[in-house]
Length: 421
Ligand code: SR1
Ligand code: MG
Image (cartoon, rainbow, N blue to C red; front, side, top):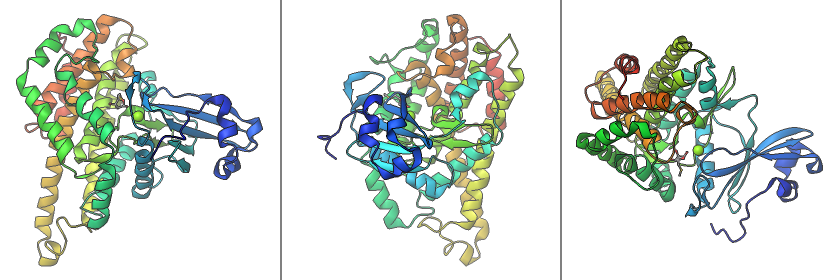
C-alpha cells in the first residue's frame, strides 16, 4: 500500500469524504445532518463517531505515527489492513464476538464499523466497579475459538500457511510488542516511566536475572512459536461491554504467535484491575466483594477457555496436527485426550508467563493502564502497583510450578495483603 493519497480525517471533512459511500450513507442517512466527534483515547489511532439521522457508525483511521508519542515515532498505515483481516477472521471463528465491518479503505487506512451502544470500554467499567454477566465465559470462548480455529489444529494447512505469511507483514506492530513488552521493562529504556515510589521494587526486578531470562524465553516464544493467529493486544481496553453483551475490538497487533499470549495478556489486565481497586474504592474496603468478582472472571476465562478448547479438540480437529486418523481411528482415543491435556498444560504455562510480563510492562514501560494511572494518591498507587509487580514476577518465573487457577487467585489475594514499599 502506498500512502500517497492518504489524508487524516477531521470531523469537519468527514461528511465530504465519506458521505457518498453507500455502505455508510445507508446506515446513517443524509451526511448534511451528520454530527461527527473524534473520540479516540487509545495509543495509536483516530476514532470518530458519526451520528446521522438514521443511525450511528464508528470510523477508525490509522495515523502514520504513534499517537501517544507523536510524529517522531512513525508507524505504517498498513496496520489497518491487518486489523481488518483479523476482524473478518474473528467474526468467522467466533460469530458475534467483534463489531460488524461495513467498509474498509486500505489507502486511507480506515475501517467503518458498527457503533456499539450502550457499550463502554471494559477498563472504564472495572474502575467504576460495575459487573457484567457472562464476561468470563464470552472472553474464554473467544480465546478458545479464535486461537483453535486459527491454528494447524483446525485450518487447512495451505490456508494457515497463507495467513501466517500475510500476518508476518505486521512487522512494526510486532516490533512494538517485542520491545515494549519483553525488553524495555527490564532496563531503563528511554520511553519507560514509573511511579517514583516504586524505585526500590523496580531496582530489585531489574537486578533479577532469572526474571530477565524468563522474559527473553517468553519473547522467543512470542517471536518464534507461530501457533495461531493472535488478537495480539487483548487487554481490557480492547473489550467493550454492556449489561448484556461483550465484544472484542482493536486487533491491529494481530500476528501468528503462541496461544497463551492472548489469554495471559487478558488475565494480567484483570489482575491489575484487582490490585487497583483500593485506589478507586468509595471508602476503604468498599470494593472487597467487587475484587472477588474480578477474580471470578479470571477463573471463568480459563475454565471456559479450557472447556471450549476441549470441545473443539474433540469435534473440530481437522488440521494437520494430532489427526484423528492417527489417534481415534486407530483406537487411541485415550491418547488423543492425553495429548490434549499436554497441550493445555503447555498453553497454561505460557499463559502465566505472558501474564506476569504484561503486569510488568504496564507499570514500568511506556504504555500504562488507566486503573493505576488514575489513582491520584501516589503512595497508594505505588502500593497497588508494587503488588501487581510482585505477582507478575511469581507467575512469570514460577510458571512451571503453578498448576491451577485457584493457586493463582490465592496468590493474588495473599499479595494484595502485603506492603512491599
Ligand atoms: C506505542 S503503542 C503502546 C501500546 O499500545 C497498544 O495498545 C499496545 O498495547 C502497545 O504495546
Ligand atoms: Mg488498541
